[in-house]
Image 1 (tube, rainbow, N blue to C red):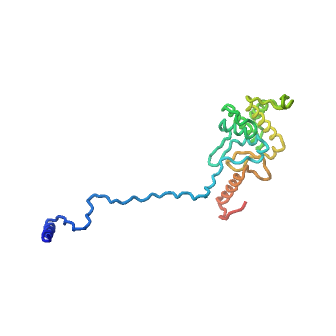
Image 2: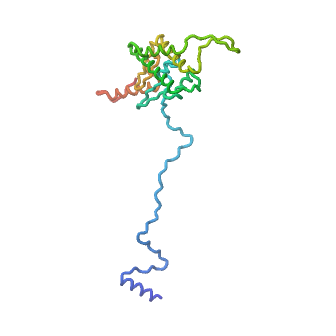
Image 3: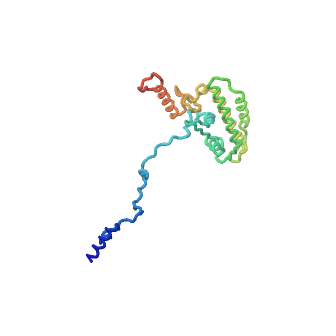
Length: 256
């Protein structure tokens, strides 16, 4: 057998053929066979650590402006809010949102079921009140159209409290408030409140928020001209940036 194997090997070498494998030797891979290399594992984002707190998200609606807790008409005028980045929030944007706003200010029941037509009336009066506030802040004559709209809203509901009878309560006085006139009474109440604000001593403290792009009004306390801490921080940051980028200014920071 040894002589036969040596003969086969010698003949293969002479003809250029592949030598037969030796016993126990591993067979070479066939041509074109792909290597079975496992694909690299994809990187995955580690799960959040239990108990960790995500970064705070800035609220879209700021807290009520100073004075809004006393005058509902001021909060009503501020219900259309301009926010940084070109954003805009309308707390009267939908009938449901308007119903919620009226309910929060004791001007309507939670299930009043406002329709879009009533909501549009609220938004229209809001713009007229904002025009009157702007005229008062700027020291300009009020627009006649805004005065007419406010006076028209004042007459939507009777101002006098009427005499009523109830078997359990007896005689009592209360404003007539049929469920079909909920919006009319809300409009009259807000118009009367705006008139009280514009003609009372608080009108001298009425001002616009000094932090762009905020469009809210407030009753000033001392030197404060901002409707919220957020607006004050933004105004101070804008002033500091303007000082740093002013031509000829030093690189050092200045304190407010």
